[in-house]
Image (cartoon, rainbow, N blue to C red; front, side, top):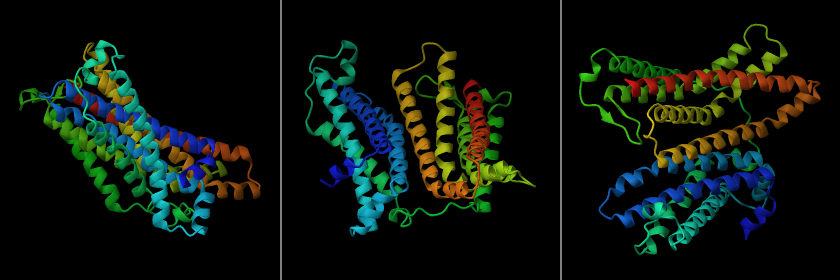
Length: 383
């Protein structure tokens, strides 16, 4: 009943967030049911690899659930303040947000299961018979147990994301310039340098004769272990460098005697770098991997597979939605600051220009890190 009362107060953004989570959960449930259908039709087949293919979508949906749950206290502070006034503590509010996310996952999983059962009733085309396990009995406990994983993981991710007492009282903490520890900069720099070195070692003349190349799934060809490890280190290092690079870019914008436009854009980007780094780094890494795979499939016709392509679309969609919700969260947190600037006489065009300049600066950083990641991945596959 409480969730129905909360849903009555949904705005367009709340409804969109809830439906996006349900849609992502439905696609993830479809992947799990496909693995189940394949296992029913071919019990002696490789069931473990089919389930392993479901791990990337599971991670993507968990990431989306965590980001959207974390945005709820900032987007709807009046709801959190009302629950607090009614006597709800931090643990109960966290449980309510996790339950709301889990309900969205249950709705998406239920829709996917209903579609799966309808298609199994001799409605689907013959090309889908193997994916649906048609012609074999379906144990009742199998799909229920498998699909219970989706709301469980989504709810746990949402509960773990909202863990700050300041977020749960409707008064989000003020954003300030992040103080990056030297270790936080030295570690990704070291990973990036080691990754570049391993890539160069794997691309040297005669490297193809060293060791046995590793066959990659989804028609991605093969690569040596040195190239794969080098790309993994470099990609992780570049992703971890996103936050410090965003903060450094913001400081460079405000360097010297900046104009009001540069000052607002630079200070804003520096203050938001820590909160923007994770979703933007994940989005950039995902796009780099997906574009590299698309380039590989385009260069070698006939190697593309439907399942990796569908998973790539889901990964990009979830990471893009997570980045968008984080931007909305930051905008909501800065609403009071924006109002103060307008009351002090700042022109609306100045604020719009500062947002545009921050976007261009952040996009440049992401273009550099994502371009290097994709370039290294392409070099590893074409070696």
